[in-house]
Image (cartoon, rainbow, N blue to C red; front, top):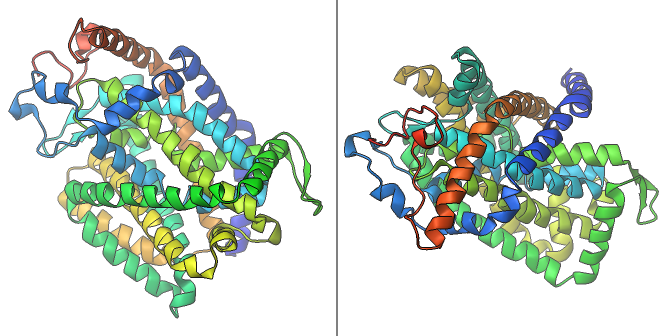
Amino acid sequence: MLEAISQGVAALGFILWTWLFGVVLIIGGIYFTIKTRFVQFTMVYDALRLIGGKDKAANEATVSEKNKPKNNLSAFQAFCISESSRVGTGNVTGTAIAIAIGGPGALFWMWVMALLGACTSFVESTLGQLYKENHGDRFMGGPMFYFQRAYKSKLPGKVFAVIVAIMYVFVFNSIQTNTITDTFISFVPERIFIGIAVSIVTMFIIFGGLKRIAQAATTLLPFMVIVFLIVSYGIILFNLPEFFSAMGLVFTSAFGAEQIAGGGVGFAIGTAMQQGLRRGLFSNEAGLGTVPIGASTSNVSHPAKQGLVSCFGVYVDTILIASATGFFVIMSGAYLEGYTGVALVRAGFIHFMGPSSEPFLLVMLLLLPLTSILGNYFYGETSLRFLTKSKSAINIFRLAGGIVIILASLAPLQLVWNLGDIFTGTLVTLNIIVLFKLGKTAFAVLDDYRTQLKAFKAGKGPEPVFYDDTIGVDTPYWKRNR
C-alpha cells in the first residue's frame, strides 16, 4: 500500500513540478535578479563582511532597552540557524538522489537554481526583517507577517504557518531521520532504536528553547561545514583528471539525452532539469519563505543586511557543499551502478578514501541531518507561536515532533522524499506570489541601503541604519524612536 501511495505522490509531483512549481521558481528568480540589479553577484563581498563582523550600528542605533528582545541574535547566529536547516540531507543525500535519477546534468540545474534563488532569498529575508515584531523573548518575522501586509488579512499568514509547522516538523524531519536511520542500520538490530536515540537528543535541545538551538547550531554547523569541505575538495584536488571529466558530464548531460560512459544509460534534459530544481530548492530553500523565519530573529541596523547574509547562504549551501557531494559521486561513477541516496554517497566516498574513512562519513551523515532537524523544528515552532501563545500547545508540539522522529525511522525513503517535493513546491508558489506583490518595497529597502553604504564607504556618512519613513512604509519595529 505504501509503495502504491509513493508512486501516486511521485506522479502528482512530476506534473506539478513540470507545469507549475518549476516555472514559478525560474520566473521569480529572473524577475528579482533584474529588479535588484543582480544583487546576488554585485554585493557578495558585503555579505561576507556582514557574516564575519559585528554590526556595531545595530547596537548604536536609537533602540531603548525596553524595546529589545531578551534573546538578541547576531547576523551570524541567525545565519547559522537558517543554514542548520539548509545544510543537511538535501546537500548530501538529496544531491545523490538527483544525480541517480537525473544524471550528472542535475547538478548543473542545481547551480542554476542557486544563482537565481540567491536573489529570491535576498528579497524574502529582507521583507522578513522589515516586518518583524518584538515578541519579548525574541524577534519574530517571516511570511506569516508579510503575508498579512500583502493581503491585509491574517488568514493567509495563518494558513502558511500551519503548512510550515506540518511540513518542517512532520515531513522534512522525517527525511532527515530516514537518512540517519539508513546510515546506521547496519550497526543496530532495529531501525526504531535509531529513531528513539535521535528523538531523545532532539528533545533535549529543543526543550531548551531558542537559546539552546542557537548554541547548538553555531557550535556544530561551522565545524561540520569546514571539515566536510576540506575533505571533499581534497578528494577533487588529488583526482583532477576525474574532476575535469565529471565537469564535462555535468554540462553535456544538462542539455540533452547523453549516453554516459558508454554504458547505455541515458538521462533526458527534462529529468535532469526537474531533479536539479527540486533538489536545489530542497537544498537551499530559496523562495520557500522559511529562511526569513530565521533571518528575522537577528538584531541588525538595516533589513537589507540580513537579506544579503541569506543571499550568500544559498551559495554556501548549494555551490560549495552540494557541489562537493555531486563531484565525488560523479567522479566515482557509482551512480551508474544502481546506488541512490545514502548508499550512493557512501559508495562514492569509499571509492576514493577507502573503507577506513567510513567512520568520518558516518559522523558527517549523523551531524548534518541532526542540525537540520533542529533548524526545521525552529521554523515549525516559530510558525506555531504565530498561531498561539499557549505553552501547553508548544510543549505538545515538541513531544509530537519527537514521536514523529521515531515513526519516520520506519518509513519508506522514496515516500517521504516525494511528499517533501509536493510540500516545497506548494510553499514556494504561495510565497513567490506574495514576493511579487511586495517586491517594490524590498527593492526600495535595497536602494536605501546602497545609497547609505556608498556614502559610508566614501567617508561621508555613518554605517547604514534603516527607518521606515525613509521609504514611506509603516512597520512594527523600524521607527525613528524605537
